[in-house]
Length: 324
Length: 281
Image (tube, rainbow over all chains, first blue to last red; front, side, top):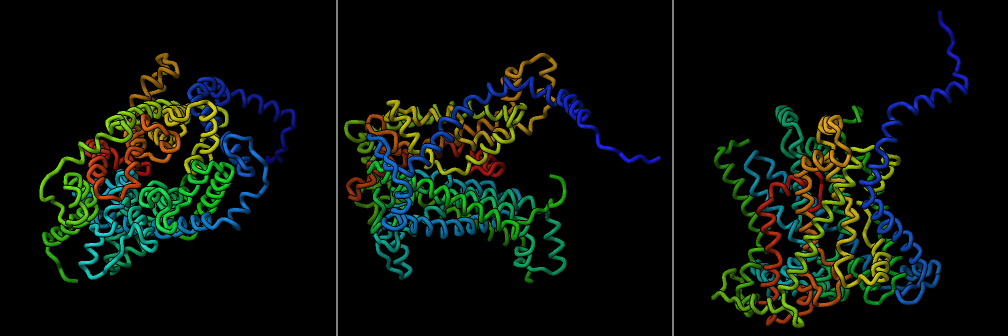
């Protein structure tokens, strides 16, 4: 006999829900909750007092004039309007930073992928080389490395001399507006070790049978790269791209050191964060600096969102449809 | 396809790798030799090897600036980096244990929030944080450099430890609970000791990043007495006269020594840490 199931009367569902709530998940939850917050206390304090609170305050400050000593004065969208219409150095810093991101990130990812593939062609023996290629990633962010870099690219330095040997006579890179940023890009690319190590881990996950099967079917090295390696590696490329881009937008130390602390020749090294530092901590225009910080956040959010959106088009997940 | 003998291909591979390594490590080797060259040779002679070894740079650089020796800068850096390591390991492992093992209200939302802060440029919190520390009279002390770490603001490490703790079999904590362990003792005696690899990775990266950190230290420290190594090196940024080169490169070389030592001692762990968690180097 088939009976049409009638929906439970509201009272019954209510009661059932109450019973269910009293079941183990709810009970368990109630038991561990106080301890959980004991463990979370430091993190929660930090999240409220050092992250969320300051974010709200800096959003407010971005609509004010504030010099740290007198109380903030509301100026509405004044700071933002000034940035984009009236501040040539700001626009210069945007330009420099965009060029840096657009050039250094793809270059760094290309180099790191090529080196990872080179190391991946053999099993086992790559440990030493992997470590050696990785070392600049740890050292390169320091003031010391940037000082070395500045000397290497100075007039009469090793880079000048080697290029001259090959017949290309360049001016002192760090003092020439056309070359200065390029030397900072190269310093960024030098630190390709971290994405390389991540690529290497990704490459090891690609089943060898795929390459073998394709080779038997007559696919050459390039076609295997194009149709096996790249798609299989695309989630890792995606991850590296997002992380490196976020990182590149915030670069500071190399620009500060190589640009001599003031943005380099003709502001050629005036990175966004460098100008923000100057505005906030040398001129004490903290409202304007806060506004700059929020524009930076917005740009990073938009760029990340774009990369995430386009991910559907080029990122291939092997486990699509299964699990998760 | 031409068949290349195995051994020849192997030699070719090694040649390529060695060439790459030479290019990549050249700046470091260059620095090591520049620090012992006579100052006038540093830029004028292309050869790596000096005509004679000179250690004036080290003695001159060690004198530091404004009556504060470079040794002081090192001491300050060691203090800041050491305390940062302790603070990070403690606070991040506490938060990580809650996220990995305990049930509580809004866990999903709070975890998502923590992941979001990974992508947050620190500039959006920088100025209000500065105002807070300035009002509290803590600018020009080490507190603004360490307190944020004591409050687990470096979400990277919370995430790293969460991921690791999730891999520890739950049966172990359950057994401890059945044996009468409280949550606190389970954390302290079971989960924390088993998380040692993640804690070591956290310690090393915290040390190196704090050691290299320039921006925060420059914002918060003004007195030469309080300077750390990067701030001491900053004094050389304005100088482009060759007379100072000896001291500059000698101190730069010294500044990199701790990182190189850490790297040599823990390179396998560091590289594994990067490849499993995607940590930035």
